Length: 531
Image (cartoon, rainbow, N blue to C red):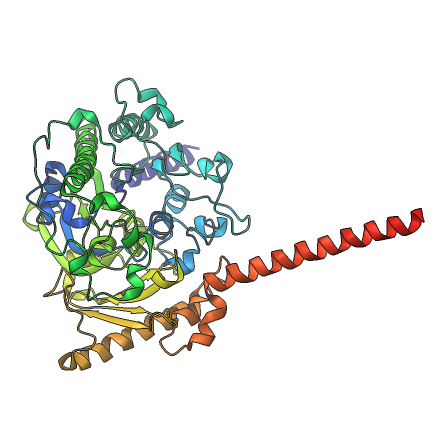
């Protein structure tokens, strides 16, 4: 009996020690924050002291890309560690399927003993119901898959009181950004009491539109006048593919370009929203210190996509250009020796890397279906990190802007494969190692013909992977044709959104015509009977 009791005690102590040894993991996601809107990324016009401090104490990744640069898809990619064409989730495609979510990092962490919490903009439904993305009920959210839930399905609101699960913080923190940090304080205290390691994920709404910053920070940029990007405006877009200039990114969001006054107001509000996220980061780090868990808590900070802010005359995100597709990525591990802190890595990283990195920090092997890499290897032994490229895709919006590219540390290749009587397929090749503003397209430069062939070959490799692994639901199989460099216009035409809509309209018209004919026939039959 004594042996059984002793074994039980040892098991409890061992389990407790293992729980304490495994690090807590805090994953913080801003919304629409381009990397250059952060002080530690070289912007001396913004004030982001807590992000800068995190970089000084951790690792900053200089070339971090979102493989799909729009919120719904990027968040599904972050959760699952898979490219969009495998995760199968985006606007105009459909929700994240339940079997995909079952292999996401928060679900796996919870299964392995972590206490998990989520707050903020979840950004997608988890559902097996068709291709519709118009879900607006909480029963499509994975509330039961977390120990503590404070999230929302759609865009959520900057007004704390309008967010169901954080409304109780509204009186002290009327703007949601600081309210999420207040929720974090309560979650960390709660998680500590469980004795389990915890995983806390917060997806801030900021700095997403509408640009309504926390008035608490009005003093920060008061009277500030900002310099525009060197590649600002339509005059710096003449060399870009015509396809890229057909979507709302180029035609709408006039507040970035209609006047200098409008630009100054917009960029000030955008930067102030980011400052609010920075302040919330500081609040969270303070809570970690006060609760005595800071020394065993990893912090990962990034964003779901970038933002164009007027570069090349673009507003919004989505496109594979630098401003729209790149975000900050900072990883802080307090267990790292002081001499190895404050380093920078210029290898390409991506949102597909978030899930496998988080799981590996927790001592859990990432599932084989994940496309991303464990970034600990890049941090600790950079010479052994072998991946050189990632694919950049846009599978949303009008046909013209749907495209795929491939990016390395020094080069970016994009194929705009849409064609009609207005435009032909267009290749772009940028030497981003020297031309970060993407001002010179080298695709037609004879001196770069060898490099163009290399990038085409890498593109084809990524396309082969898409062809082999794209999910069969939610309209992803079509990209095997639409992104194929050798596909003809006739081969691509059946898969275009315009064709789908035309066929749908035709089918609807035929259906209505048939119905009308049936009704007319019924009326004639009734008249015959009366006679």
